[in-house]
Length: 154
Image 1 (cartoon, one colour):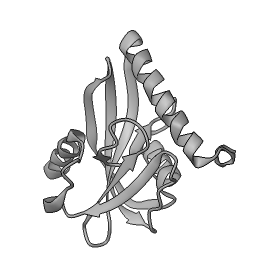
Image 2: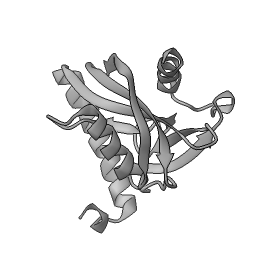
Image 3: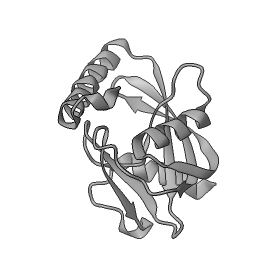
């Protein structure tokens, strides 16, 4: 159904929704629950994505966890929706709490291996890239480094 909307309009709607969500969270506060996936290819390179909204910096894929959804189920769903491929050997690294536009973001961090070839949906995800850890892009979001520290402790 969502693919009936032209991709440029869909990207614009993501930006508008992100703007509205930020304002709502600043006013309301509370907690939001999400997931992040540190996915690697067979060579050990890290998969990073650029979203069509927000800072547009390189980040690990992920997203929101739906009410009553198990965090790993949410991580697998987000990964499949955004990148049209699956994860294997999934394991949870832990949970982080961090400020998020006036609310607290409870982030369930997972790691896994990519099964298939990630394809950006060109709506929410506009670009994907594989990077060696020693060669992360300069415009990687600071959350990438925080999540990698969690991977180091595992």
